[in-house]
Structure formats: C-alpha cells, structure tokens
Amino acid sequence: MELVDRYIAAVQRELPENKRQEIGRELKANICDQLDALSEQGELTESQIAAVLKQMGHPCKVAQQFVPSVPIIASEDIPLFKHTLFMVLGVLFVLQIVGGTTQWLGSTEGNLFGFIKHIISGFIGDASLAITAIGLSFWSFSAQGKPISGSNCQKWQPQNLPKVGPGWQHISLSDVFTDLATYLFLLLVIWCSMWMSSEQLAARTVIFSANAQQLLQWFSPIILLSMGNSLWQLRRRVWTTELLLANVGINLAYALFLVVLAFSSPLLQSQVQSAELQGRFTLLQLEQWLSHSLVIAAMFPGYEVIRDGLRWRKLAQQ
Image (cartoon, rainbow, N blue to C red; front, side, top):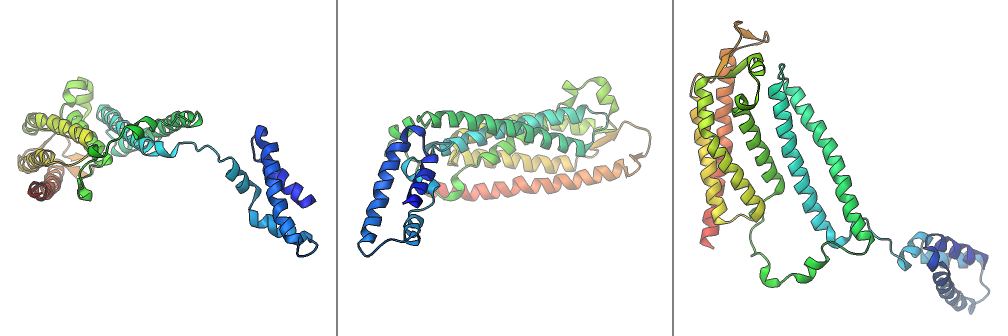
C-alpha cells in the first residue's frame, strides 16, 4: 500500500492545506474499494496497484477534479474582456497616430520610416501596459468569485436580442478605429499650419500648394462628419439602412473629392531653390506620383459606395 500512500500524498500536495486531509481520506477510500474488488481474484501485485493508479490519472489532474483552479478571467467575463481590450487598444492606436503625426510633421527631417517606427514602438508599449492592467482588473474580480458580467447575464431578455442578419452586418471594431485614426491623421496634415510654428513650416522642403490647401480645408467638414459617422457605427455595431446610406454618401464624397484633387494642378510647391529634392526626385515627378496615387485611392471609397449600396438594397427589401 506504500504506492497508494505516495499517490495520495502527491495529490494532497496540489490541494489547499485546509482540504488535504478530507480529500485524502475520500480518495484513499475510493482506491481501496477498487483494490478490494481486484483482491477477490487473488493477491494483488505492485503492477496491478500501479495500473489502478495509472487509470485514475496524474495526481495534478485528480487534484483539479476535487478543487478546480480559479481561471485568471471568469468564462462569463471573456466576451466583455475582449470587447474592453479591443476598445482600449483602438483608442491607443488613434492616440499614437495623432502623436506620431504631430511629431513627424513637426520634425525638420520628416522621415517616413521614423514616423512608422514611432507609431509601432509607442503602440506596442502602450498596448502591453493596457493588456496587463485590464487583465489584472478582470483577474481581481474573478479571484473574488464575482464575475463582472454576472448581473448582465441574469437581466437579459430574449425580446432584446438583435434580429438575425448576414455576417457582414456586424461592424468590426478594428475597422471603426482604423477609420478614426485615418480621419485624425488627415485633419492634422490639412491644418498643420494652425499648430506648427513658423520655423517648422519654413523647414519643410515640399508643401501643398495654396490651391490644394484650400480644397483640403474646404473638405474638412466632411472629415468631421465622417468621424461622427464612425462614432455612430461604434455605438450601433450593426449595419442598418440609415448607417449604410450615411456611409454611401460619405464615401461618394471622398471618391469625388480625391478625383477632383488629383486633377487640380498644381498640388505641391517647393520651398527650396534646387530643382531636385533630396537629389532623387523633381517636384514634377512628385506631383505626378501624388496625382496617380489620389486616383487609385479614390477607387477604395468608390468600391465601398457600390458595396454599401447593394447591402442597403438587401436590407430595404427585407
């Protein structure tokens, strides 16, 4: 029976101290019952006892059956945890875009690689801190046996469940926050003259022409309207006919504006006397590249106009 005692002791080491004796006696009685049934067929050997213990499972697994470990995050809190995490990471991403853009535009070098590196490194640092803080917060509630979602799970009503719809009708959080970051980036670039010093503006090699700058500033109300539409999407999280119509209108405005801007020459002007910029490109080459890029960029909101128009027709027919 020494093998049985060793097995029970191994199980008890995985248990809380106040439950070791009680569970140890219960486990030993269970094992002895199985061994007594086998002993009726003849004298037990050590290999037979080991086979019985092997069938019961590893001591850690057996201890988990008696006293299940408390998860870091309660299972009913996992959806709320994921939603909170995505929301916080989305806000941090937007803030990093804002901070990176202001630093990039305010820099005399205007290094695009440095801009991307600043955003990535800053977001990783902030995201690590946010994940740790949110995880510890949820763990503290789980450890107390008080899941955050407990009351919500008890108060739900079947009548309040959303209607059945296609998979595309769910609005992704990542799409919403990506749009918000893009809109903020555009506003910071368009209105850089409002927050940058005259020295920083004078240090820029290439800037928008007066004609392009005026067009961009006239389009700023549409960008603000786009931000409001994204916040509306964030609140609803489901595409409706109203949201689809608003999205069609906004994307149509972007597509038309990008095409108009692409053919509104001149788009750029140089603040240096040299014909070449950084010894690589001329101002004319940069303008042609920007014009082609704007036409290509206009295809994306144009595609979304067609896509959301078809989706709106499907929802309107239901």
